[in-house]
Length: 332
Image 1 (tube, rainbow, N blue to C red):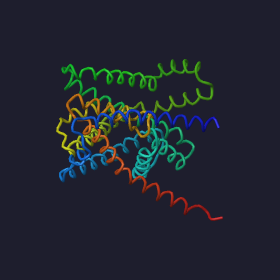
Image 2: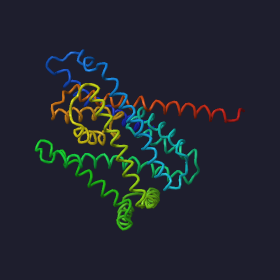
Image 3: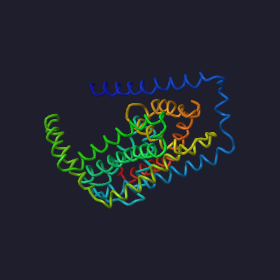
Image 4: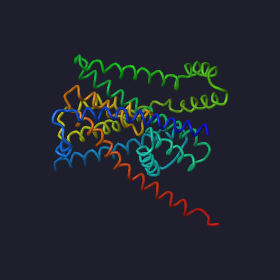
């Protein structure tokens, strides 16, 4: 009963966090001078198709490179699976990410699939690799925003302030990685956690830290840095081509500066599917460079639609795998 109440309360809170920002986004769009519902359709022309197809291709390729990075991390945890089999699990995870609240349902699904298709040894390894894969993706996005900000916008007084969140987040990631990978700092973290968490939780924390030591490999880090650069660069480019599709004419550097900040916020499990806070932040940021509210929100919605279309192949893999398992089950 308590668990059900807690689940309902969490869902209601997420719904509130989704609807309240969404309401302000809507009010800002409709309060624009001369607003008309036809404005949405007027943004799309026959020339919109090609940029959207390019956006689809960019996201599809990024998923294949992202899956290869996931495979490398899994192998370091002694989870051995074929690449094309992992591609299926990866796309199933993308499908669940789009239809589960909080944007983390797909990660849970991927870990679950690895566990049931492997053995007991893959449980912790699959969780650790998947967690680090998501964590490093967010870290690299933040690095992109920080690097682009320093290169292009540090002299712009109106944009310089936005370097601070990226800088603080970068430092927070560095501290977290140090705690996870440094044996000395790890001991200090264990000493503190012993006084906070019960023994059953502390044992899991120790095992979790120990598994992270498998990632202390220079060649692995070089590979995932290159793969993350390609993967995250392509995913930011999806928004750029969605902007072109509705006639938005701004430099690609703005996307590489703003979209990582938006992605980090939307990845937080505080709303339903990232909706609400994502659109409100995008509206607020792009407004500073003269992008109308409607266009800034449409770019986010189009990018989500592209993600939805690409992830539909995950639904196909999920249903075919489910049918295959049901056929293998003995009939009583």
